[in-house]
Length: 235
Image (cartoon, rainbow, N blue to C red):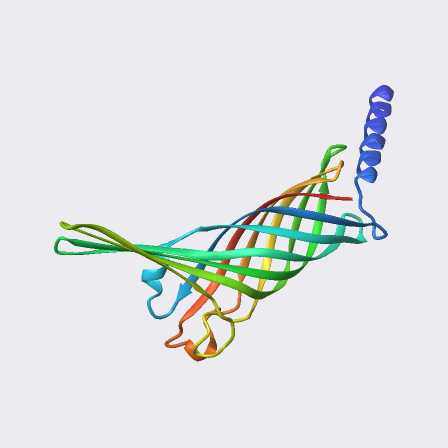
């Protein structure tokens, strides 16, 4: 029994030492970078929402973020950052009238400068690293964007295609395409190796109606929905 108690005490001491080595205290701080891929869509409601949502596809973009980790307690820290986010959506559909089929695709890309502030909980996994769970608000500034429209008509005479690209304008007037700002929330899960390398996934829940105020009718609403996957390093 004495040997068992001694062994148990030794294991408990070892576990405590490992946890202490992986604990981020309130005095710790880090700087990091991460980059990766976005899979984004826009969620619609109001007039025409059923058609848009049924024909919406994920748009592939990218993300790049510089961030800081500032410890405020054991394994708990605040993570502000500045991020370049490529968001958008794709809408694809087709209709047939007699012997003629018309199909169309609208691809929208929006470049956003985003400022997130996340609260992060760190869960150590021994000497290898730690899981990180994060959540917090962000504010985004839409700075650039394009919409590419492709139309294809097929009938017995053959197939013809046309394509057109337009620059997006931002604001709340009738001649604007989307609002200039976007507010939302981020929810993330990641793993940080003790060497500093990070793997992460993030979900961005847009809360701002992207339709300019002067263009809204009958409850029309459009909000960003973004899945982000990234790799990074903090030191």
